[in-house]
Every structure is written in C-alpha cells, then in structure tokens.
Length: 156
Image 1 (tube, rainbow, N blue to C red):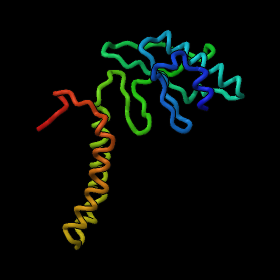
Image 2 (image 1 turned 180 degrees about the vertical axis):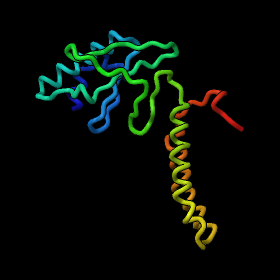
Image 3 (image 1 turned 90 degrees about the vertical axis):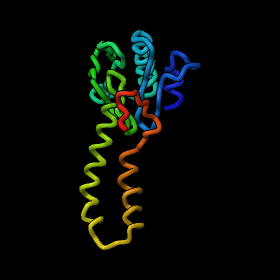
Image 4 (image 1 turned 60 degrees about the vertical axis):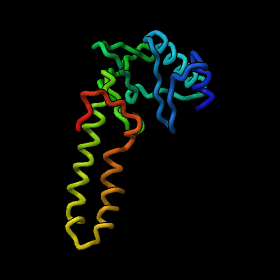
C-alpha cells in the first residue's frame, strides 16, 4: 500500500496523508489538489487490482467558514460528513475539539457507573486508586496531548 500511496501523492515533499492498517486520510489546503489526489489514488489502486469502496469513503471540509466541497471517484459522489473518527479521534467541520472532549467525558462517565460497584467493595484505597487511574483517567484523557484548547474550552 505504501508504494500505491507514494505513487498517488501529488506532492511528496508535503505531509498530505495519514495511513494506518487499512485506514487512510488524505488532506489538502485546497479542494482541487485534494480531488486530484483522490483521482491519482484511485488510478493507482485500480492499476494494482484494488478498488476504493465508495460506500466507506467520506469527505469532510474542515474550515472556520461554513463551507462544504463535493468530491467524487469516477463521477460517484462521496458522502460529505460533518464529523469523522480517525484512529479514535473525532474531526469536525469547524475544526474545534469540543466534540472530542464531549465524547471523552461521556465515555468516562459510563466507566464511572461501571466502576461504582467495584469501588464500593472492601478494598484498600490504593487498589481503588489504581482502578481509577488505569481505567477511568486513561479513558478520559485519551490523546489529550493533541487537543488544542482555546480559552472558551478551559474550565477552572
């Protein structure tokens, strides 16, 4: 797959794709370059006997302005998503991190309900702390190092 994506890359000097197993994300500062990248990737896949699954392929325009762009593969329109998940992180059209934080909090809240019976059992405080640190906090803070927090997202 590396050879295919390298051959399809319109600008090898620029980081414009992310690959992990069978997941791939393409990005570009402008829609025409991205459409050409999609076209080149499709041609390379076909040359190697593969097809891009259009039903599983989505496009998202991330912008501060409310805009969407139409992308296609051989005339077949790609679904325009308002958000998508890539390797556990949520990307939204407005580029904000609020949705990711909201989902992390929901997951951590769910885990707190699951942990409640265990925390009520007779156990040493250190074991309870280890449970909270290893399960609850890791869920809540998953990939938090990558979160850009604007002032209105921070609470004291």
